[in-house]
Every structure is written in C-alpha cells, then in structure tokens.
Image 1 (tube, one colour):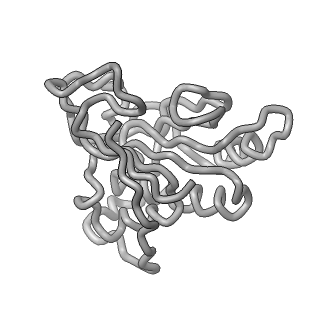
Image 2: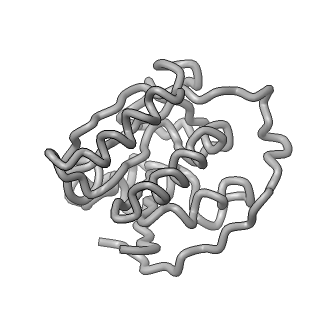
Length: 181
C-alpha cells in the first residue's frame, strides 16, 4: 500500500475564495450513510457530496459529477451527522467525505464549517477525505480543510492503473496521506 505519513499542514485563516465564489452556490449531496464500514477504517458516517470536474474515465460514481445532483446540504443534515457521531449505541470512529469531490472549491464552503464543528464537538473522531486533486495541487482556499483531515486519499482515478486489491484506493497513482491518527 502506498501511504505517506505527513505532518499536519498549517491553516491559513481568512483566505478568500476569489474566483471560486460562484454566487454563493450551496453544496448538494447524493447520499448519507449513518453507519458505514466500507469507506475508511472502523464504523463511520459517510457523506457523498455532489460535484466533481475531474471526469475520470471509469469513475464508479459518475452521477456525482453534477453539482446539482442530489439534495441541498443544510443545517438539518449537519445536525444529523453530529448526532450520529455522538450516538453511543453505535460507536463510530469518524466521518468520511467522498463524492463527487469534497475538496472542489464549490464544496469547501459548506464542508469547512462541518469539519471544524466535528473536530470541536467530537475530538475523538477522525475525518477521512477522498479527492481527485493531488495534495500539492490544492490552492490556499482548499488547504483550509487540511488541519481538520486525518486521512486524505488524493489523486484522480486512472483506469489504466486500476487495481481492486488496493486498500482504500482505486488506482495505483492515488496516495494515502495520514496526517494524524
């Protein structure tokens, strides 16, 4: 397994979205699983967001490419996620964000407050994120998410490098960055 132990990147507060402020576009999501054992280590809550511009050939979730797919993400869903993470009847290790692309700038606006709140109210929970961007490709706005992410799986899915035996990755080019844990 290709994995990198990385130091937690530092946050740069008050960074503007600049060209990504698309008329205050709200994020949609396709699916929420309150109990998931597939998308990360342990039992987790998993949110599949809408919107991805990578267009990877062979993507298993092409319906997530459209930013208008699914339903609007709002305070009710945020409250449900926090309630589920705090539920002592089913111990969850953390939250997974997938999609779509959680680190697309149009999704960061909604997800940054969510991950901040998860870390504040559930400090014992980890956060895993899958993105088609490489770590070094993230702009300053996207990098605001990194201090709250424990595990980042980066890189586009490349069908020619697909390998079903890989753990947490679809293709060999993708890298698992463990910032914490």
